[in-house]
Amino acid sequence: MIARDEARAIARTLESARPHVDRMIVLDTGSADATGEIARAAGAEVHAFAWCDDFAAARNAALARSDAAWNLILDADEWIEAGAGSLGPDTLPAGGGGFLGEIRIESRMDERGSEGVGQSWLARVLPRGVVYDGRIHEQPVSDLPRRRLALTVGHDGYTAEQLARKGSRNETLLMAELQDAPGEPYLWFQLAKEHQARGRAPQAAFCFTEALRLAPGDVAWRHALVVRALIALKANGQLADALALADAEVAHWPASPDFYFVIGDLYLDAASQEPDRALDHFLPVAESAWKRCLEIGERPDLDGAVAGRGGFMAAHNLAVLCETLGRASEAADYAALAKRLRG
Image (cartoon, rainbow, N blue to C red; front, side, top):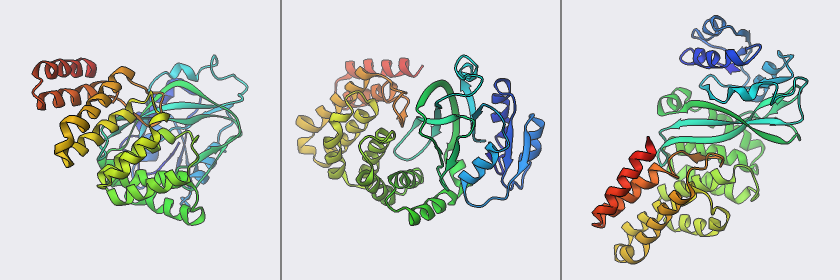
């Protein structure tokens, strides 16, 4: 782990990991609070590192302190929620292995245009020798295949409070990276997410558009890119562009509740803009899209999926739509379904 001024949460992270690992190594990149003391009290080794505006350099300095066959990488705003058994020898061979272990990150979000728990898959269980590259949103450098593990990690770094605490750090580093690599779509994607999380609709829409223009169709984060881009274009008043993108992508996401959930939102927006076409065109499409979400169900395996879009959130939208259209019995049924699915 690398950490700086994380007294708020670092004990939670370390206590969740301690029963499942042999050593805990924390690289403190310049804390002014009690991060180091709390980490030591939780059983971690704490080492100092002079911050150099380079996350990969810090990650690699932390990894250099480890002699383990496998390394679990966590951030201080994360914690193990479930599936820690996948860190055992039945999954991770004692002598190391020929793969990178991807784990599911469940992020609590209160972004504009998104709600609930966002889910992503990241390579965080690394065999000895794998290192990172990238000043910001650093990635492991390896040709080894990736294997999804059953480990689930919670994350609360995208809440408004935590985004405010981080300030413009990530944005500044991303802009510096883009100066060196303006054609790198992943950097545009990450910058777009920064803008979207902070409610900057024009900047988010522009950056997502650039990422879409530059990214190959088979990148692992394509699903998250498309869904977030649709939300950003709608938020920026570019409904026609969002609908055009949806038409271009629909064949690729027949089993994505997230995609169809956003389609429903787009057509609801279109209905409000063209009320004379609402009843016979736009609202039936929105209703069909949200019904499709329920048919598909939840898909936490899709990168960027938001929990609820294949369940209670879609049912809630259908309840509201049916109520608005005077279909009280259907509205009550969908409301009950939403309550049941939410649990």
